[in-house]
Length: 488
Image (cartoon, rainbow, N blue to C red; front, side, top):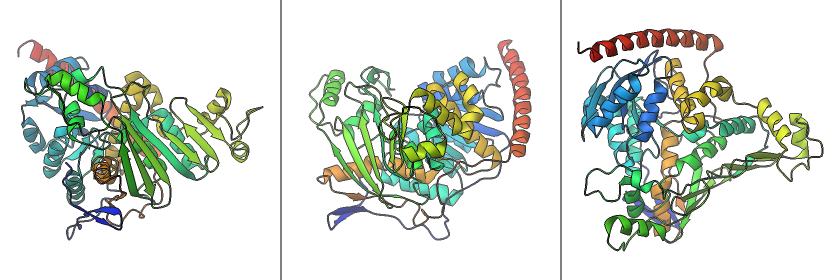
């Protein structure tokens, strides 16, 4: 990380943008042929990975073919503790430092779902793409510009999906608010805020350690070694969709600042028993971004200070306002109250949050079709309240119908680049940094972000076939586990 070449010109930092190789085409609105049954292999079976396996067992039209983890017992446990109780056929297991390579070489897998520690995201994704697999990568998918550009080129050249598993884009409030914004409820959205403010004092002990010499665990080690917003996508993802990033607008320039490190070095000293003389990541990092269309984005990161959990998620428009943390609410001016038909007697328009009844009216009127289709089951299956399930079921939906994914490789690049670009800004006295155009000239090709949908008739057909497949798969799975348990 922090090794991508750049130059300073007229007080602005400019990073290298590699030319698109000859004959290689952009991946804007990329689709792959319809995958009627999505065959998936999972890499990384810790907390996030096992949660994903559990959710995928509850999505019709999928088959879990392989389970891979550094530790053999985790791969076997996912089989016995998740697939077996749900009557899913046992999956093949892979383990060890390079077990994922054998999994990626298989010709009966359509998608590799990567939920390992950050350090292994890129190498597994690269291997999967090189072996002709679509890839879904947990956040943050990549940590530096070298990795970002390589994944962009692989997705473009292989014509395969390389998506980022940003679950916060699928929370109910964010989806409903996005639908409102797209319907003009807030007027023109000018300023947005996002964050990851999550004190991890109770978590540092839980992050995977490779061996007895790994005293810090991968996440604290990353905080010690790297500066910048190293976990930006929870805050940035949903608001980037609001602003149509690389779909008519683009992030043009950022400036990053951080405070000194205080609690981080103390954690290092606790685990190592030695003085910590260098800790790169500041306690609190703030990144300001200006877009090509003169909108402003503010992103914050802090995992080391005591504070209430917050992703902020706030938008300010010319006619309205939305806020998720610490209070979910909306504020509209008089004109928008009249246009939306929302009744709120005594409400001081434009000065306070809508009262609860009026907010419910607004949400019911502009409920996202994705929420309407999936909310009931999402709340039952769970995964951060259901947004993880919606994220996964949307991925399967798009693959089955041959549609562009909601989050493409350019989203992955844009949302993850804050880590190294912010570091470059701060290491050079907080100078502005030009954000690369990862589409290399194609950010205006699409006019506005949108979710892709099949026709109702197509949905019904796929839903029926998927349900029948899963019914038969479970019957097969129950029989296979019965045989396995009997020793046959």
